[in-house]
Image (cartoon, rainbow, N blue to C red; front, side, top):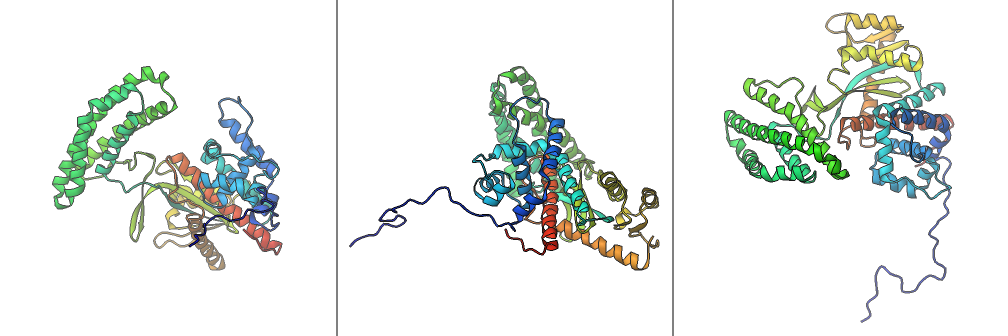
Length: 465
């Protein structure tokens, strides 16, 4: 019986296939249309200005800004990982065309793309998005005389916070980072091994048997865990003070872990008093830390069915007539509050476009006599802020109906950027700054895709890709 080999031809080809295929790019491809529409000289100059304002030194080789700006646009239009982005730019012809790399075999790697976005930051990506919105206004695709604003939450990709979980996470992170942060901290881990083992047993006991215990018993277990963590925290502080003298001899990984330990020490120094306050009074302390990795995130009360609270950052979103969006991140609690953002959104539009919208709508959360007065002073003629209680509307008739309809449309835009395509919600970010970059990039991608769709509709062409 003859067994044929699978997965391999029995006879080789007379002429081997080329490893450099020639392929044409459809002129109606979405990325091609974006490439032809955007003014890359202005975009590169904008990014160069952002970069120059953040670099400590201009030493080193000049960056490939034009391809990197193209990569930013590509990542904005569709959510993808850094590895996937590198593969797309390297092997996908429309992506190479977008990044101006069709005449070269160079491709930015994963680290280069990541470092570029980190350098731009949330404020840099926001400036790029504002440039796209201005271009949409100049092309007549966005109507700056009509605006609607609202606030929303950007959830962080963190587990549901509880006291024992946060304390246990602290212990595991300290043990992992200290083992790779130099001799002094390795010695600290060896000396504190008994404390680590005791804490691990208590956490296991809490996780397995807490459901059967009363609230008083659970609080007692949490209090004992806090005592262990505070004892370990004191030892860690002494070890970090000793490690400062030998920090210069550490490698890059050791310095990175030392920095992580210092941050953990600082965060848990704030967390343990908050837990003790909760055990004593039954009330959550102001500014309660809900994540060790991203301590800047906070609790946002939403009142939704099935989701009363969300853990992340508050954002303000402004929608111009035509559907283009602008976004503002609230890094601290209260930075983006309805009572503030109802006026702040109009001020941002004045700064960006030179004048306030003629028609403006907001939900009842932004209603206040002072706010309405400030909106009128900024130049808003028709103020469609939904009133609280039995107060009358500032507009009526057809104008009221128009603004109510516009107000509803902003929810569609927020829902779109939170979809899986753009990745606004629960981004793969390990810091508040990176969450800001992901949020602004999602809004940028929404605006870029809308820009190219509206242009294709105007030209009566069907986009591909």
